[in-house]
Image 1 (cartoon, rainbow, N blue to C red):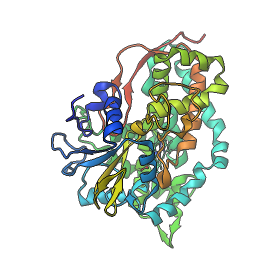
Image 2: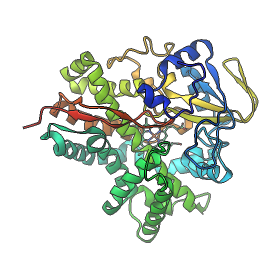
Image 3: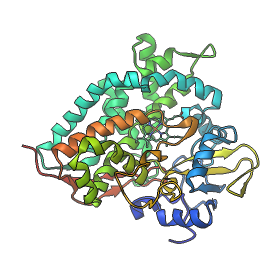
Length: 413
Ligand code: HEM
């Protein structure tokens, strides 16, 4: 791979079918805090945003953990959680998002929504998740083939976050389409690119917020609309951006993991055989190993709040830092023989696919439950499921995602 490879190249991940591990391994060995230079070779997904400043890429597990846990020194708020250099209005939107809030507001909003993701409330939701998982597999099992990403993998996450947020059935399909669009902004070939997903999602959020103001219910959206932080209601932008975040974060990622699971089990038939020998015993750790081996989120950003040092490298105040989850997950100091896919790996669940520290994924428990429910149905009912045709990957510097995977299997009778 060329030493000039720039992580901002949106064709990098699709062209090689996943993150550039050869490059990450080389950097981790010789240059673990690697300087990715600025570039104007690639168009930003947000008009006006640029890559006029380069950034430091962290490839070591411990560095990613240490930086993620230290918000005072490495902020998600200062420059926002995404790597582009943003215009003031774009930065304001990112800072209104839970992932980019300043620490005090972040904690307050997190407290508001945490009960929805806590074990008690989630457990009450499990029977419904199981039922929907079953009905999704019912809808394809007799056919012998389908397009796995949209016919199967995306259905459960979309249903789930719509249910949690209180999105009425009539809007579910629209939210589903707009969430896809918002994650696919780096694809210039999209005919509908002129219709930016996040803005339309904001309009839907506004409509929904008005409904919940007039008619409160026990949904998360209703809680957000009626809650007060320091005696003040959350503003429309905070509520809207939370909705946008969940439409992307709660969907693309869980869907991507289900797709990687099927793909990886086919690439590693010995591991699949082991799993099928005792599904209940092996499935939870197999999901963790899929998340370690192929994390769907490739990176988030932090900004240094003072001159400092990471692994002996001087970092200046204001420098951008790229947390590479795929690289950290293949650090041999943490995961011996890291490029081996092993569903019995003892510490697979120490992966960083869900991040670490104060911004650790709020939906991790929910994602794990959904994945287990859906994948158990698949593995037990259509066990010989296999890719059958060309895979298409998302053009993205942010997601490691397959967007088209035709599959075939023996139809269920
Ligand atoms: C396999 C599935 C998932 C993966 C790999 C994933 C990954 C991540 C990562 C890496 C972060 C950390 C961001 C940072 O440190 O800046 C994050 C945060 C977040 N995720 Fe997830 N996510 C998944 C599923 C979900 C689901 C199902 C939901 C909700 C329905 C969700 C909601 C969130 C929220 C709200 C945050 C922000 C938390 C905060 O800033 O405090 N995620 N996720």
